Image 1 (cartoon, helix red, strand yellow):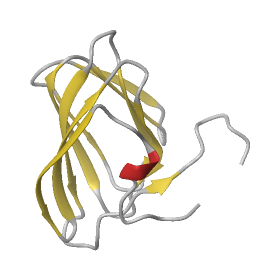
Image 2 (spheres, rainbow, N blue to C red; image 1 turned 60 degrees about the horizontal axis):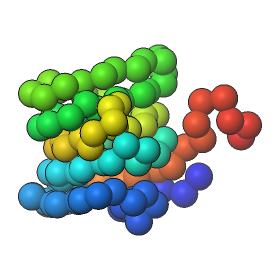
Image 3 (cartoon, rainbow, N blue to C red; image 1 turned 90 degrees about the vertical axis):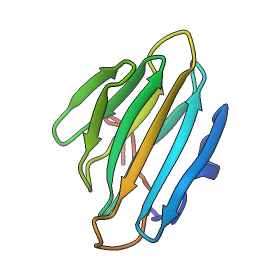
Image 4 (cartoon, rainbow, N blue to C red; image 1 turned 120 degrees about the vertical axis):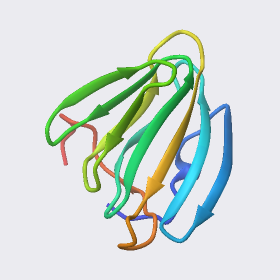
Length: 120
């Protein structure tokens, strides 16, 4: 798979607003409608932290397998290198912040990965 500096063109969302950005760090607000997703991917050095503002967010991850459902004011963090996918877990849209931090170790990247169970 190819690593991208920005994977936003790979997935449509209802709204995407960038609040802060510097090399290796960014804060983005996303709104996902039911059925929209941030597809399976990972980051080389970036830790993703998700904070739900409204609605219900589902974060699925592998290595190890984990499925987390978050409501307003709840937070979940995905370590660097861990494959994950983000979806709206309810019928209503979900609005959340994603804080991507490369911990001073490099630039933000987005590496698409196969969904669990998909043939390589």
